[in-house]
Amino acid sequence: MIIKECKKSDHFILSINALLRRLPQSHPKRGLIEGDLAKRKAGVRGEEAVDYFLKDLPGFILLKDVRHSNGTGDFYQIDVLLMCSNFLLLLEIKNISGTIYFDPAFNQLIQSKQENERGFLDPLIQAKRQQKELAKWIAAMNICIPIEYLVVISNPSTIIKTSSIS
Image (tube, rainbow, N blue to C red):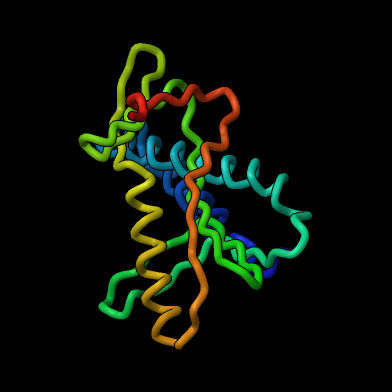
């Protein structure tokens, strides 16, 4: 059962589209803004693809797009939080196409697509941080429940690689 739907992305995407309609084609920041818009749209599509599989998941309560303060003025955001009586599960959803390589030596995710490479912070690091922050908050309320996390690559055609596991 989904309790909290994700709404902020729609508003933000509409805002960026409005900005781009008013921004001259020759503006020096236009490419940067268009790239950000494409990333955000891909993220929304990725989360929607995962929603298909989660919407009727029995025994779980789902919270989507959870933004929470860690108490020091910083915030963290969880794409999907699945809750049941036995544990909490954080899902960090990535909609990345092409071939991706998880490099544990440098804590980096490398995307190869059409002869181009891009580096990203390893989403496992992001998910671990979310787990740690949520665990601190839960413990402060004297609640003891295991918190697990998964990184979900929502694009089914993505090729996932990593170094061999010893």
